Length: 444
Ligand SMILES: [Zn+2]
Image (cartoon, rainbow, N blue to C red; front, top):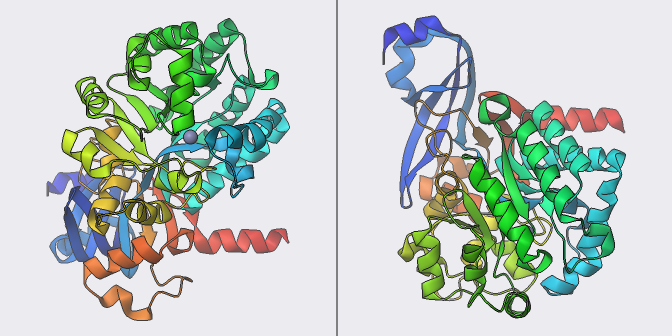
């Protein structure tokens, strides 16, 4: 502990039970731990309170959460902002579900007033669920996407987001001409990528191969490659019907993965959501190109899309995190998504420690942001959540005094939005359960 560091900045302490991933099966686990955060929102110490106590005069504020859990903020690798209005609409597989529920709801974002209302709702939901970074699909509308970035900026959220590109096989009201689709993306990237020292980042976001011409895929790939640090974010191989359609549309590419590879869309910072129906050689291409995956188990369950090859992908060494895929995933809570990840595997267990890793540090690695976020370590930005598994869920009262593996198991298998007490991004509290409750009562 360099003593001079503590003299030079305003420091805040957060005491509690610190649980943070080190790797897949390994945790940092400190009861009566403390997280010391400076006024830039950087973690300057994370360890036992007893170790820090002698420096306590250097603290400006101390928040004591007792035996409640302090863990890294959750990272949602894939979700759709405009779809918060259509969660829970079931009864169709992917292609019909898009046509019947999703496309009409996305069309409404042509109205900027509506887009503003939805963006406010979406980011409030995100932080209420303890998600400190969302990798977000907007709609094809440039203005609505701009509004969404403004809302995220104002609320202090962290997001990787982009305007959707679609120029084929979609209703007229969601089909754009190629030139304006590309220029709209480019202008938004120019305006928002890197905003607030990298809190907001841009992702080029072609919806998927089905709604893209070959030319669109080629051109958006060029834009992405020309701007290092930006992301490519799309869907890959979610449903069998979709895979068949892609084969018809792109006969020159042998597989769905090849379609993106042939158009230059795979690589470092390329995020492919779902990635279910893939061969070993498809996975080899994803690994060789250093592409990342967003595993969305709740969505796969909900739309009956298929089973992600969790252990197979892991053994290939392809980087991946988990995503809620709202609205195909009915809930934004990544605790529910962690549980579903385990339930979706028919013949093997996924353990709470590794699921927490996927929802935090694993996601950060898949996004190449692990030097900034994903775990509670000195030098990283202080994105964290305070959770209380007994909070309003009916989990046994004395769970916080139990061994850590029992606490984590309770969180993963019984937890949801209700366990989140506070959400912090870069040391700034952007959600607090008590204040949110007061606000909603005063609005009634
Ligand atoms: Zn999706």
